[in-house]
Image (cartoon, rainbow, N blue to C red; front, side):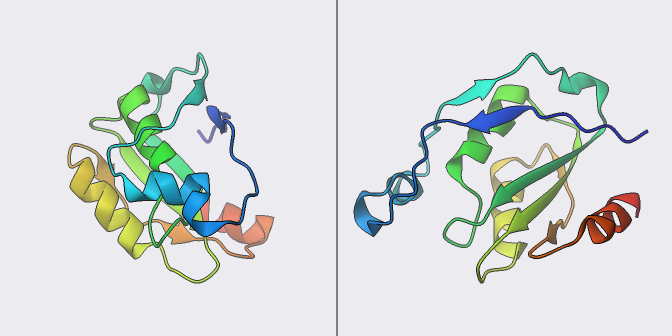
Length: 126
């Protein structure tokens, strides 16, 4: 059964474009940063497979993805990442997530730039 549930939202991200002072740059510079997010009452224990979407930041995932993974405890789950990007593919992000969280069954995932709903539906059904 396919189920979709909004589990969390970003807090406090702006459209600031000043590279060295932007939040995304500051977070990227420190791999130990765990940005806050709004945790919901969602119970992920009932799911064996989780699709995890995020934008590309510096050829990887934003640090808030680490916060999410650690807060929800995905050990033993199959996680299928998907990403949007202006130029990078998803491979480096998945490599980093596999290294940081080897207890999770990370799938290769997919870059979904410009994908239509029909294309996303077909990919999820695979």
